Amino acid sequence: FAGPGDEPIVLDVTTPAAQVRVPTTRRYLMCPPAYFTVEYAINPWMDPTQPISTSLAVEQWTALKETYERLGHRVETIEPQPGLPDMVFSANSGTVIDGQVLGSRFRAPQRAAEADHFRRWFLANGYRDVVMPERTNEAEGDFTWTGRYLLAGTGFRTDPLAHSEAQEALGVPVISLQLTDPRYYHLDVALFVLADDLIAYYPDAFSPGSRRVLRRLFPNAILATAEDAACLGLNAVSDGRHVILPVEATALADQVAQHGFEPVFVDISELRKSGGGPKCCTMELRD
Ligand code: ARG
Image 1 (spheres, rainbow, N blue to C red):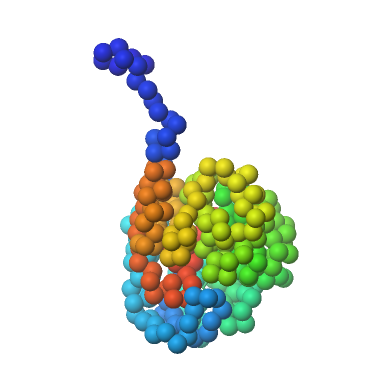
Image 2 (cartoon, rainbow, N blue to C red):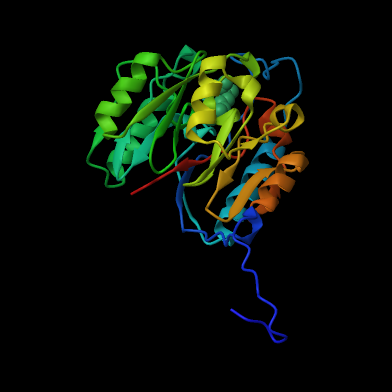
């Protein structure tokens, strides 16, 4: 190339922002928080004595759903059930890759009944391959598909033996990762995938060995700060271009933007009182 004055035009493909990030249309399954509350504590975020506004949770959830729709994504919903206040966190109830469904099995008895409502939703909505796990398996709470590997968390919820079950049921290579900080009890509050070549994570949420695995597989990953992690900033959803994340995760949003993505903020303050964020409320249907 030569410019007008014969000076060379440098096409700088080395800076991350030079990359054009292209979104792909997604299909998500969400559950309205009609019965959302905090009446038991199964993670350090939950305090049954603090006041909860179900209507504010519904408002924030609706704004999240409308954000997806505005970005061109399709959102399916499942009927919420009285007595299952955490059912809004649909990510915990299934891992869907290439139309194959691996359901869930909750660790806490208070959430156990959610799994079968989702199993029935899958069957009623045209899914043929629905496998229910034998071992404790909190689905996309602990399983993250990069397009290449299924990153799998363990330490608080999902049984490590569920990792090999997932590999067998879904036919994808599983990478086990050890979570060590009770505040980051699920993989999806410590790590998320932005695109098939980029993830973001909070290193301190992982064991030393798992940190080395992540560094080896993703040497150019975005590393989140303690503040970004503490507002559940890593509980984010990317469509390949737009990254939906909690409004408090400002440093993470800057890094995301530097890599050519468009941060889209949502307020999830009420849902966070249960230890959840945008991703927890969103199961991806990869058909
Ligand atoms: N209160 C819920 C629990 O502790 C929150 C689940 C959040 N979901 C998630 N995918 N991290 O089980």
